Length: 111
Image 1: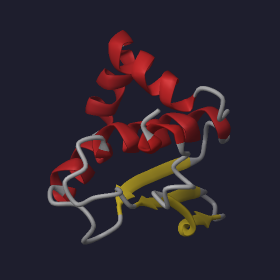
Image 2: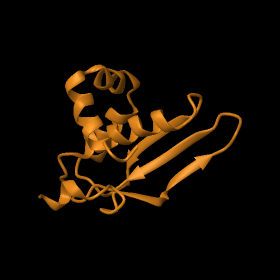
Image 3: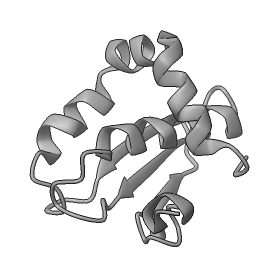
Image 4: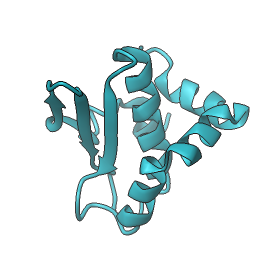
């Protein structure tokens, strides 16, 4: 089995507790930075989307989430961060059955 696909994002240090910030204000929100395993990781957008989906399933509906790549850790971080911040693009991805099958497979057994 390919090791990169059998480990969790935590085990690969893609998601780290110290890169998660929770702001418990009148408008609560969560800010998560994730660090791809390599600077040209082709799965970075999928990882970001999976994190957003996991948060939407786990947090209260009024909790805003911001998911982005840790600065300086990916060759196309600005473009990917722009995609992850675009509500319409994220909604379109979530509405796409093929994309969601892949996201759900990523989250399977971890929810």
